[in-house]
Length: 326
Image 1 (cartoon, rainbow, N blue to C red):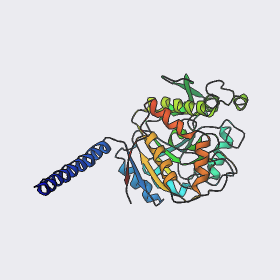
Image 2: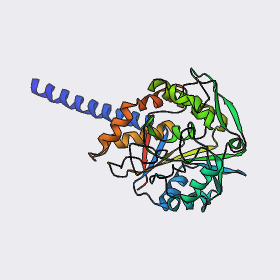
Image 3: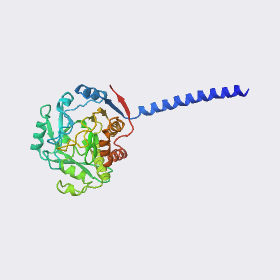
Image 4: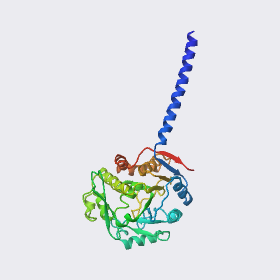
């Protein structure tokens, strides 16, 4: 009798356990359906850039479509190559937009910056707009701790839609450069860049380098500048990041360190926080031992705090659903 009872009890527990497992799996699936999607393709090709753009389900449309990317400092070989991005840029009838820099280099003024853009091949595939050529405007930062405004090139206001086309890699100050950095530091005018880098202390491009705050304040200032851009543009934006040439240095460095790990692929999302997090997760989860250098750069500069604070500001989610298109 005891044996029969034990057998029945075991059967009941097995059925209950199976039911619980099914319920947990179902709950997980339901949870993932509400998360922002990050699309991924391993092979980095022009065709796959268009494929991942189409997967997002949001068309870049309007009279003027901006494609925000880095033209790369003179001497830097790691920027997104025009041959790779040409088809996508021309398909959306995009204008490449950039802002002058706040540090010594070859992109501090319009004439020199346009020369670099030409030398790097960007003017051959699309019009290039250095947005602060004719002045700058201020966008409000609502709920910021450090910045009251985000100072951007005047021409930014002319665009109806923006494709944020980022080269994901390391960065000497931010730890990494991805979508959020591309729309914060990347869109800011030189005065705006100084304002962000100083945590809201100065707009002076000369004195800023003696007023650099703690890493966490810089990360928060970048997130606040990102918020001003996102508040302005609303849903008239999409984000694509190419994780290749994974140097610990960004495209703003004239002589960057050589990449120590292999390329990862193309990522895309309508959520910039999820996108940046997915790129970082891919680095951390890579089997390439060379990843230790990029991970050290990200962590030593408190790069994850940029995502944490951006999430607090409501710019997106660090939790996401990864959708592989390969």
